[in-house]
Length: 374
Image (spheres, rainbow, N blue to C red):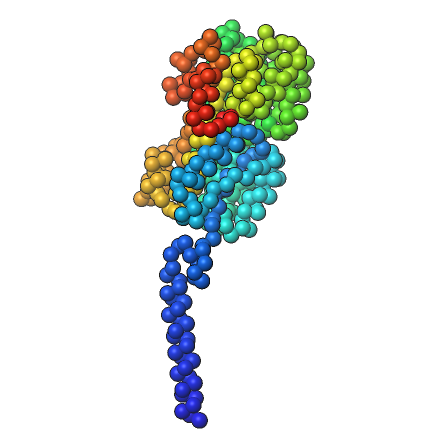
């Protein structure tokens, strides 16, 4: 009986030892495979927009290019764009949803409300879970809830648009601004920057928000003109505001006495400029934001501190800290676009870093990147 028990115990010991060895070897597999030999889960790099607008289509193009150039599939990563609906609640819910999903590696967000503490808390909750979080296109007031911001310097962008208005109307004028949400950081900064760039001879008569609704966007233009008949300069702050302004101006037949300057180059706005209905555009580079945002998220996930430092000169790979005010901000490109060489606006009126294009030149730039808007 004792001999049988000994042999049974030895067999159990041998089986347990073999199982332990097999488990140990399996645990040393490549990152691309699981312990059972199956493919590892593809992790997502998500860019969450504030709403739905053609502006984001160009950003998706940049993300797709980065997907290919950076060989994300080879390291089990995939970049994708997720659109909000211009509401704070929708962004909060999406962020909370990401926190429950095991395949989210990094999130880039264009926040609908810079000061919303619940959005900031949801971003912090993702960070605590190990998800990398950055802001793109529009930043948060609370900088602790994100690693860095990548996008336009919207104060400078607003100033450049103000300079365009000043160059078109040297005598000054009365203006109104139109935007989707005035709670968004980029809206606040552009509107404030416009006033600075336009100068003291320009007086703000109104500033209206449409909550991302394009019918309301047109109604806002009508309201501003009805309430303030002396308005001579109409300023589009978000991409779709441009065509809303043009439509009302056309319907009222007041183009000859109205200056129209806008942000971004939505497809309809480009057609409007081609037809002589927009005087100047300050155009961001969402394609670049999408590409570099994907590159930054990948570097954060892989703890590639050298790549991060190459993008942010104030980042110290050794301490993994930013050194200096504004070191955690990557500023993407700005362009001023005018209808033709006949425009009174010239490159020397704007910052040296701002690129200056005529409409045909800008169309060629977009064609090279397969873009329909920017």
